[in-house]
Length: 113
Length: 116
Image 1 (cartoon, each protein chain N blue to C red):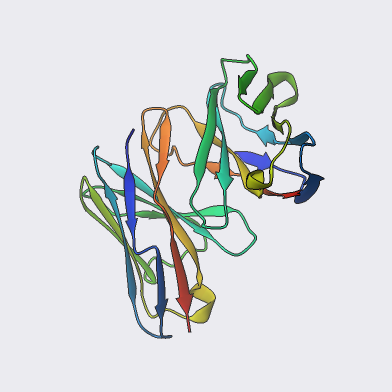
Image 2: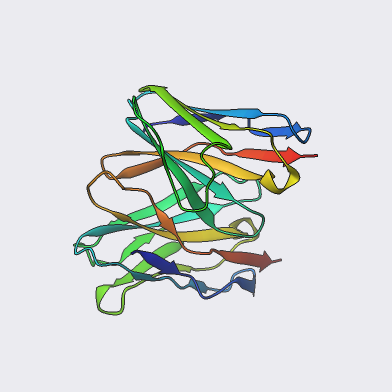
């Protein structure tokens, strides 16, 4: 089946720095990539939807200037957490749909210290 | 708007017991998909099942079974003869069938602990 490869699987960064998370579709073209965030012991909440070649759509309450999404090709979508703060520490996971299926990356556990 | 409710936050059972995880959903769509995922401590989502709203047949896969009741908007998941390795967080999710906004709407999850 289709595979979404997400890197890094975990990252620790200092407060104020930026972190980039990559999601690649390995054997299919992902015109749309969904980015979710999961705080400890909570559910997955949709942050934004990226579309290849166009601007991402952000959910209410998600700062687009802080969470930069780039979907420049059909196989790569990136999420950059800019000027990260401890409250951005979370589990980030990407997903793409192929027909009826939903494929998820392995997730990235971000810790901001 | 779509909504998925998993009322059971945490469940603990003893190994070999059967356990049912409840899922109730709300949607205005006439056609939709329902999913169950398992999330072990590693965080990765493990796909368990996808069900089309047209298909109300119950499904069994090994120790897993699913009961889809469209009349009550429920899609419950039963694990029979539970094992310690079943310990994880389980999420029920809902999505549209078509259209640009086909993201999954997740329930809050149920933490299942199977004790030896």
